[in-house]
Length: 303
Ligand code: FDA
Image (cartoon, rainbow, N blue to C red; front, side, top):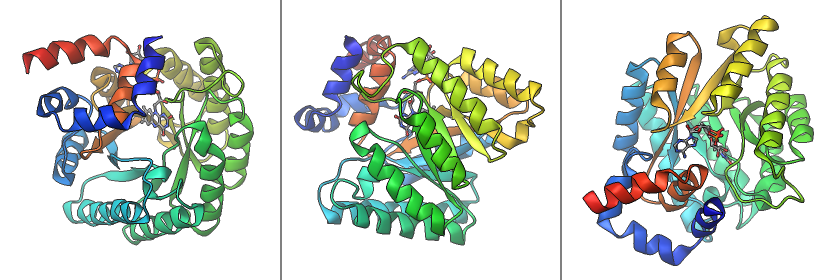
């Protein structure tokens, strides 16, 4: 119930405007967001790198409706890639398709992605296309397919809660594409997504196994220790080396688990968001774990 409310609120622009402009909320949000500026993101990457993990930088923002906004977001990523190179930090970038124009025009989105991917290519870096709500899935996969046919340094995200995902994994693997697998963070109806968490987890493991057997380097993105343990066991049993895949976690979540995985010799990547448009991202984090609401309220009133 609370989850559905947070996911509904994540799409309410009026509440977003209020929250984003209310300075008190900033302190609370800092648990999940590195800061407003690129430099904040780079500092977080430096720290994570010094602790033995790698990163992916996300400039917060989504669902833009004007080509100029999509162009501005693209520029932020181009600049970020230059700074990543200049600062020698170990991070790639993650980009939301609707932030670079998917909902305006698929062609525009593809053009903007191509610019980011080419800049990343110049520095031997990599671009991950995040996956958003199911109204974007098909378009995102189509844009990815066209880009993947031209570039090696682009990957996609697949969500285990969607019924269609097994077929999508097969298609992406045929293209030799790198996948980040996650459970999925949006509100989806039972007509298209598994309604029970056990089914989502079962799908997650089925897809993980398929991915790991593909000999392509993939990302297993979850904080769920049960699934992480099962992934480790499956890899060991099938002689899949630790270096041939990575675990991925979100900034500010299960940091001790990240340290443990690093210590065990696994590749670990942390998804580090920065920017001012933190509201929808933050509400999805609350939806995943309603207990975060108490953390939010406690800090909100202390601030
Ligand atoms: P689950 O929700 O079962 O949580 C397992 C445990 O992790 C919890 O018991 C708790 O300890 C901890 N935990 C999880 N979420 C927490 C939170 N918000 N606050 C505090 N603790 C928390 N989704 C998507 O739709 N598109 C995408 O592109 C991405 N990208 C992405 C990148 C990376 C690196 C990660 C880790 C996740 C995503 N996601 C995503 C989000 C993903 O779909 C999912 O919503 C969250 O990871 C939560 O699910 P878990 O797999 O962690 O399991």
